Amino acid sequence: MDCTNERRKIYLDNAATTKMSEAAIKAMLPYMDGIYGNPSSLHSVGQEANEALTSARERIAKILGCEPREITFTSGGSEADNQAIISAARLGEKKGKKHIISTAFEHHAVLHTLNKLEKEGFEITLLDVHENGLITAEQVRNAIREDTCLVTMMYANNEIGTVQPIAEIGAVCREKGVLFHTDAVQAVGHLHINVKEQNIDMLSLSAHKFHGPKGVGVLCARKGILLTNLIEGGAQERGKRAGTENIPAIMGMTAALEEACAKIDENAVRLTVLRDKLIVGLSQIPHSVLNGDYGHRLPSNVSFCFEGIEGESLLLLLDDKGICASSGSACTSGSLDPSHVLLAIGRVHDIAHGSLRLSLSEENTEEEIDYTIKAVKEVVAYLRGISPIWRDLVNGKKEFITK
Amino acid sequence: MALYSEKVMDHFRNPRNVGVIENADGVGEVGNAKCGDIMKIYLKIENDTIVDVKFETFGCGSAIASSSMATELIKGKPVSEALALTNKAVVEALDGLPAHKLHCSVLAEEAIKAALKDYYDKNGIEYDHTLFPDCASCGHCCET
Image (cartoon, rainbow over all chains, first blue to last red; front, side):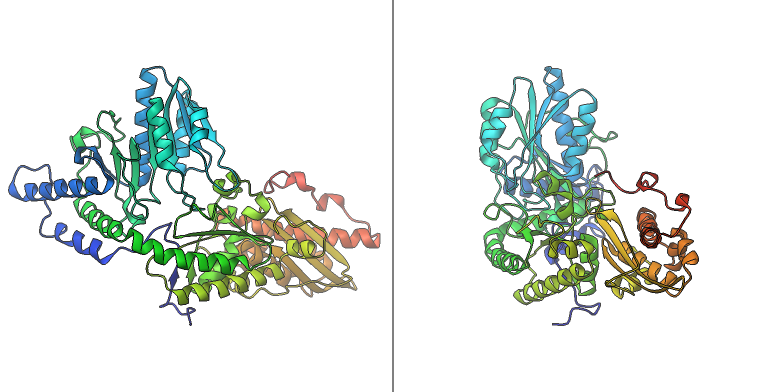
């Protein structure tokens, strides 16, 4: 299989973004030329758009197990995370509750918002995610205090793919009367979710992670939770998110979500086979380690650290071989530190720099997986061959960190 | 635009002078694994001339390309010229580096200086110590 020419790419970065589905593109087009009205307009062209918006809200609510009025359309996952957390904080501080529980490996949309609140005087508890990247409902129970106003935890981790026991955590939060938000950006469209059954008070999602368009997402917030506006200037979204609704994107997102959710089980079976093949293949590389629990992980996620090499050069050489992947190395993050997720699960800097994330989609084939395993083995071996660290490790001048 | 220039990608994909020199006259290693880049330079010096140079690098694309280019720039040159190599010269020869990757070129300059210092020390040659700044003067590396 020749993937070195430009036309053939193996895309294994679906946790970063996905290709739009045909259904999503098709659903968007009518709202660009024919039904282009502003849903806030009174005339028929506007009302047609408004009907589409209403139907999209209903269809998404049905999938998530909530009421249409509990859906707020946003610009994506980051905005939804920001609004959920800020809203809970504002509600909390009115009652004198200024304690928030989260984890150290959340997305920066969550962590940076929590940092901002900490500067305002909130107290933030970040729970230990352990070496396997999992937290327990018991940890949450033990961390909840009289003044806790919010528990916010990601449904599935974007780098290492671990899936948290969300329903159990939701049950604890409900019992204790604490608001529970989950950043479900990596989970929606890939795992079965029902906010009511799982006791989720607020949930963030982003369309482009399940073959929808970029720049659109949802904050699902249980009725009775007063949202704080991040954007002022209009009565859209029940006055809670100003700005003319991005109807084409919302329609694309809705179609993509319906399609993805209809195929969750079918996709999971297929992806798990490919994922496990990749994991087994890459585990053959000596001094490598799988990041994140094997049993509780997204069907699409493979994350490894390879000792003695650096992630950016690994990605560049894989790209030369037609493979699009991602890494949590410092050089790819633009900072001196490697990924906070890898550090949170206890990977030391030395090996966190040599990380590789491969995130699959339904379009990937077994042939592509075989090619990828071979390519990663070759590139890792080559980079180790020019690495002074590897030489020291092999010569016994330094001790291996991994097996 | 791509992250790196064609020149950088060429030296990254086909690095020149990769390897080890057994019984090298000077060896220099800079950087650390915690920061994510280490460069090691081996020099063979005869009659005050760098007759051979090899490198090993653990690091990103620009670190590998910077090492490769730096070795090309000093190979066959008198020791005095190698000592005068600046990171700026490495960057220029590579047709530029992104701002957040400039430290890779600094590392290449330092690795060569460290190897030359080793050569001087091994051979008991007198040298101007101010030409070899210690680690404290480098703003790049994180503390270990």
